[in-house]
Length: 112
Image (tube, rainbow, N blue to C red; front, side, top):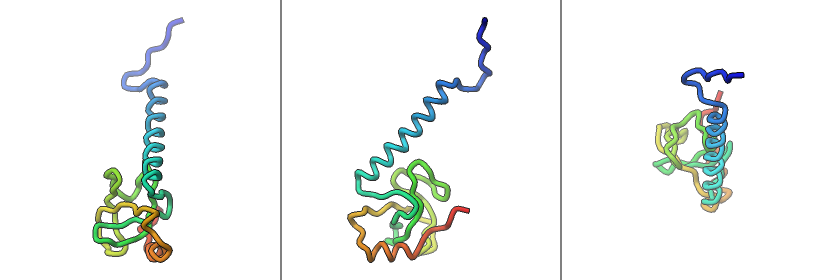
């Protein structure tokens, strides 16, 4: 019995599995890195724009539907100053309850 040749341009099942595993490992590493550095990730992450505005956003490692990822910085819309800018998460140690409440008043655009 001879093995059927794989169509040209289509990766093998082993290569696809390796690619999926590499992507998942990268996402896990980014999450671990952020948590080890003191950042929280999730649906209500407090971020600061370049003009020091605070607001909450969805920050999921390995995914960005409404921003451009640039490592630990993302380029997205700031609802406080109503401009597009680079934002980065704020460390949990730098947040007190007053700052969390103030940042929670502004959330960037929702995902439809």
